[in-house]
Length: 426
Image (cartoon, rainbow, N blue to C red; front, side, top):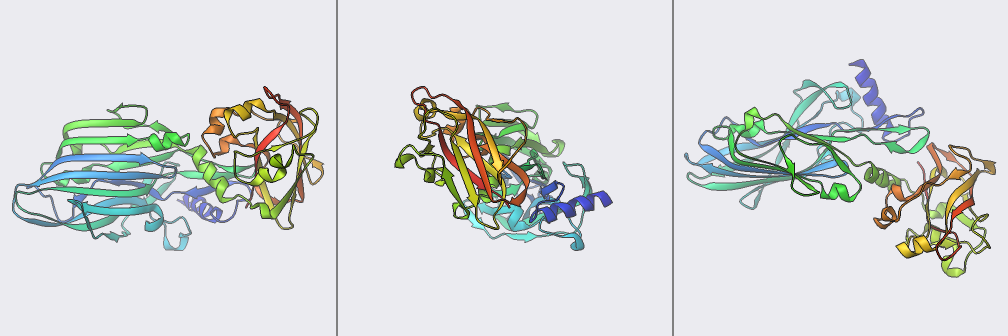
């Protein structure tokens, strides 16, 4: 238990400052969720006619949409109704910014009965059981409840809908050598057993869908999926069952990765305003291709050098005093269209000077990895940048000079182009 507490404390501290030697940066306290259940006791006179689950993975969250059809073949019923969320319980003296927080970790929780929204109360429990989180630490977890009240008249069929965003389970790390974090896979658990408190514990029809369309659109991918299903198409994984015994089925669980999207959000959050630095270039190919295009957040504009040949040009970034720098990235080439991207030259090698000193890391001169047009075309993400400067810790720097020493020739023009330059730091 001692090792666990140390790790969690480091994680919380890292949420506001970068660790000197690297370490956990953000730890999700959420362990999982589950079906809704009547609070008081088993309701044998209410049949669960159908259950439809739709899980939509996002960068750090999973959107949960649940629809139940209940049929009451008994007397008029009024009952409390609850949905569980299981999360780490951190002792009061150890609660830093990463302790479970309802508004931070569960967003937009809403109950509906036959289309009418029901009032919801959240109950934070302190009772706990020990479990092992995905990242290997044994920790106490508690089951917290979202509650409401249901009324179902005798002989009535009613539709219950629940929707919310739940933070996935994960732990991300920072590194003193690199600005971007190391992102772990996100995992999600969902327990079907609470719904077995309706009727005889079976769902007449049961459907679970993992909708990965949004995840795939931001370069993410599913890693592990529940057994027993199939891909309906490239984006939808479905399990469908008849007369499913909910108590006999183990929890539904899956994992996914969203590294590119998460790192792109992180970059945008730590982007340094161009007001904190000035850019000077060796030359310009007229006013339409000036250095101001480098920091306008617009891939349809570009800086183009105006010298003979494709090498020898440079970009000098001079920072205002007190500006801490971790990362400088370039979008090499003229990214307005596929035509401009291939027609003009783009750099393949550079040398970099930091405060007039040669900056060494990896190959030297730097070899810029090829960036396919398909990656540029999909829009802002870290995959479209090449890092000219990359440090896990922020440093006050006076200047960075990027000298272009090699180029991929354009199919029509020899002008070397850069579409965007981004500076980031803590």
